[in-house]
Each structure stands twice: as C-alpha cells, then as structure tokens.
Image (cartoon, rainbow, N blue to C red; front, top):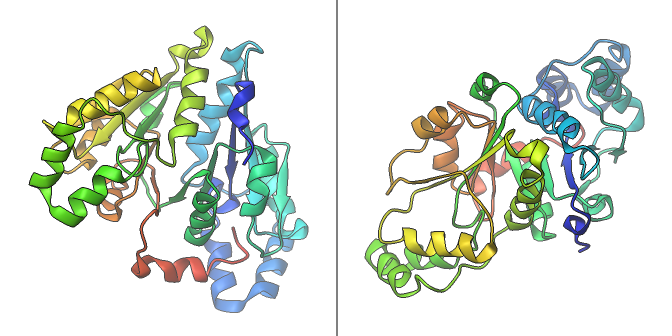
Length: 313
C-alpha cells in the first residue's frame, strides 16, 4: 500500500450512490435487471441526479481548495460500478452541480476497491458494504454511507465538521476486544493500567492524520473542525488523550459519553459526517447527521443489501 499522505494532499474516493440520489435507478435495477437499468440511465443521461447523502460533505471538501493557496490540495475521485455508458449521467450530474471532479473509474459491475491504492485514496465512501469491507481489508479507511435525511452541517456555512468514534475507528480495537471478552470492569482496569501506553492506530488513523495536516494550513484552519465522540468515560479517557498527544495531533472537541446515546450530541456538534463501527450507534447517529458505518466486525444481518447492489454504485 502506497502512502498517499506523503505529499500533504488529501484524496477521497466516492461511489456514485453515495454522491447522488440513485434510489429510483437502483429500484429499477433491483426489480428489472441490469439491461433496464442501463437503458433508463442512458435515456435520462441529461437529467441531473439530485444530491445524495455525502454530497454536502464533498462540496465542502472541494471548496476548501480555495483556502489552501496551493500548499496542498483535496481531490475527490468517483469510483463506481457503473459502466462508461451509464456513468455518463453521473459525469453530467457532476458538471451540473459544479463539482470539480475530473477523475473516475467505472468498473462495469466488478469490485472497484482494487483501484483505491493506485488512486492514492485516504478514504473510500460507498453505499455498498462489501466494497467497503474489501477497502478496509486493503488498509484504506472506508465507510458504508447510511440513508439519512438530516444535513445539520448545512448550518455551519463553509465550515467542515467531521466526527469520529474512537475504538476500532481512529484507534485499534485492542481495548474493545477486552471489553467484548471480559466486560466493562475488566476494560476499565486494563485501560487504567495502560493509560501511558498509546493505542495503536485504527483504520481511520491515516485519513485523520492527512486531514490534520490540511487543518494546519492557515487558510483552512478555521474551516475544519473535528470531534472525537466516544462511549468511553473516566477512567478510560486518559489513554485516549495521551494517544492523541503521542500522535502530535489536535482534536477540536472530545466527548466522553460513558455509554450515552450519541445521536443528540452529534446533532449539537453539527457533524457533516460521523464514522462509527457499531451499527447501533450508527442507527442513532443517522437520525441526526450523515453517518458512515465502518464494518470492521462481521454482521450478517446487514449483508443482503450489498449483495443486491452490484451495478448501481
């Protein structure tokens, strides 16, 4: 895996169904098959698609380039299971909405994750869980975008707000495994004893560090705000704080909720996106903010949708 953070830039790969609302097209694909889907997209290729759940995030990311003053850049690349024919509607919609997205890979139904490394992506956003799982296995931060009608980040104007869970997202799942195997008391005792031992990085560490480098650029510093929103509470807070200190990074807000429901806090923060590995936390969060599920654990109950989404991504 190449290190795309070495040049100071930030690269995001996104699927068409995360960027745009393809619900009607997807319904045709599921009910009538790939040929009907292809014909529908070609017939409507000059009809712009409406924004999808990740559209506001992408708009804010690209707008940050104005503030970077050539010191770095943020690039968004389309990574789609569409064919070139059906992908023309996607590119027409990109142009209609004024998004500066110039690079794309259309894989005609095959898994697109194999192009993530040569594209140098720090983050992959998709509506397809299986593609996300493959990207995570390849060492790239990835999240399955969940349906959400909430975009509270719009109230923040140009400011981009990104919130992260801690264990198994920013950090490794080493502490989470103790909690799952031995319970809360054993977890708290272990974290108390390891308070001065930094946690290993999780799947989103490289993306977070690349975002932090962008945030340090003077023109962008006031337009990016990050938050750690974790179910941890005292005494498990100290190891997290010392880990971030060891990474030499700044996190603007840290909420140690001690098991409280995260949804209301994310609404108050006004996140443009929130990343969490627990499906329950994601289900709460997506009622209030755009949410990306990081499926680092097997959850068979959510796999059927991904099996049905082979072309429309």
